[in-house]
Length: 318
Image: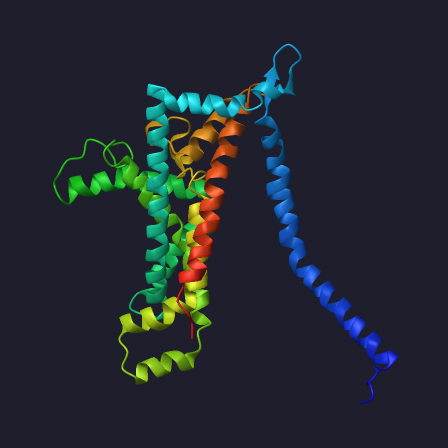
């Protein structure tokens, strides 16, 4: 058989198509790649260096630790954890961080249910859409001020005037309700973005699939479990993965509500921020940087493992 040879013009056409495909691919990945380099590598590069340095007060410079004491900053953290008072502090921060993480997961699930409610255009769906999305489009401090007034003043007035009860403290002033109120705020404030993403994913579901389910007599619950959830699972898995990645950086908006006076509610993210905020220009950032690196080392394999498991066990759209 004679070997078919391509004409030079065909070879040039294929080469041009490959170049156009590569240019199109480069245009797609350029922006996220630049964002990753600037927002992660550049921002954290100095933090990695600081975790292996110490501040020399005599020269007013940061210098690398000697090789025989290269991990001093990390050892200092473990020493603090081993002490009684510091150990209790770290355990309390880890517990509050875990509460914030669980609240985030609850918010991810609830927002998907409310998104289905909005998607099906049930009674009051436009009202719920506005109420849940408004906090996402107004400044964060405005949301904090409004919620602070509601939790501390409005709720107390309602209890006193309508229910003829008494409240000595508002929800954010009462130690027994302060953490729960903060967790509620963080769940509520996250609904807007999640609602937008979930409803957008649901609107992309083929009408024929939903019509076939209705013809077969599927209930709303069956439709949600068998059609809606598998179709929005990729969005759901992204939110869950991000929730794991943010365990050690979630501040629960504590600084916005209480400034630096929320030690009893402190999460690890809030503690790191407060430590950095309180350090002077020439102070020691080394221990804080080491704590951040240590948290990254812990959470990175967990996040990647969760992402892998979610991909393996996720439902199939087919």
